[in-house]
Length: 270
Ligand code: SIN
Image (tube, rainbow, N blue to C red; front, top):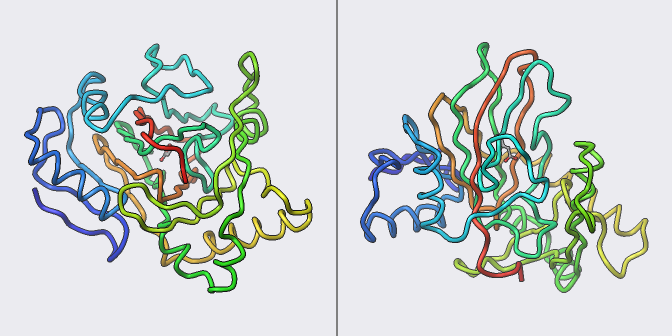
């Protein structure tokens, strides 16, 4: 297995791995370590059945069922990521971390893109939320430590996607604003504009101002990011505990198609 980094701190292409084949515990350990080190792993030229895709996901844990319960593929463990000329929106077209409204958000997601836009575009940007934390000043880090934010599925799923909520509504859970990655022990800035509604204990105006400042910090600091330029049959596996991503919808009226498997985290963000 060869690792070719996309930037010095986030994103790497993994060469020499066929994800349709089962691999040994040693090979799995190498991929696992690369995932922790690089946060975003890109595997090109993969020919995967849905079962292969899910089998790779299961090596890391239980597969996630999306709360929007899309009917797209007929398999609740596979989320369709499909955009055509008729789409009203494209999923993930804004900075976010996947499904942080869940009590146990995914530890990672594996997106397998099989159709890319005919005239280019449709890249995905990923941001390193360890570095986003590190670049904050010490007084800001101190202020954020111990704060808790609410993450609400209604924001994207009803607000942006106009999806009818399931019985009991979409999930809504609280997570610390600064978390510690359960495997690396590193601190993470863990709020995102996709799901975070407010910081508890602050006035509405204070919460809005701090969240907007943090979102601007991510959006306006290009050095946090890497860019995945998809080719058909590329699978990208990101660490959802320490990254945000943004799917760029710059290709209308062209189409893009992929399927995503996510893996439920073993621990709550803490
Ligand atoms: C998502 O998982 O948010 C979609 C990412 C993408 O389509 O690139």
